[in-house]
Image (cartoon, rainbow, N blue to C red; front, side, top):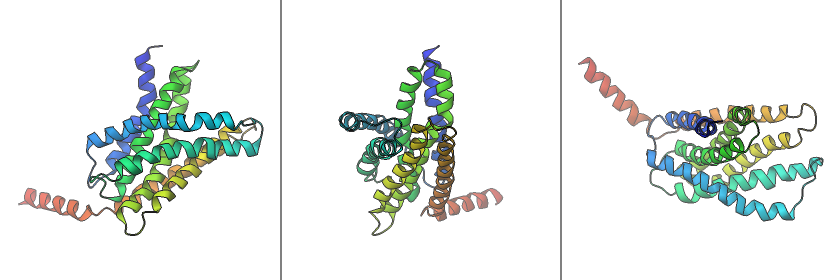
Length: 242
């Protein structure tokens, strides 16, 4: 199988989702260089995840058939560690940047970081799979949009934390929301030895997508740049009609 094709298969879903979210930032879009930087910070977050999780996984063995231990595995050993690894870069690298100046920016940067993580992870899965195409196609509709969904929820709260007075603690709500949805999604896959239980993963993803779309719409409507954009549009129309 052509390596370039597999690379494209692994990265294309994230690129499409990233472009979709970027274009949803209608009133004051982020500099491309920062979005690209956020993506590579997401790649770097995979290293942080490995550094944290490797010794913990050695110290905390998980019984495959234990529902309670798989819950610990899903919510703490995977979801919390991965989301915290992304959170580090969004909160302490991108959050202080002067371009992070409206609520929707939290979503843009969180999604960009998350897609860097998901893209690198996807490459590893696809390149090391016995059936690379099937793996790539399945993850195109499951894991990659799931990572983006978790990021939208995290970014929604980070946007509030940055742009609203006395709500800095909302950033931690973002980490919690992303961890809970990520953990629920993974948990149903981890216990998929129970017939039909995998449907729960798809259901949690769909619920996450529903809330993500709502979160994006709410932050669009909360943009302080709406009136400026409307004035520019009105002036443009007046010039065309004069």
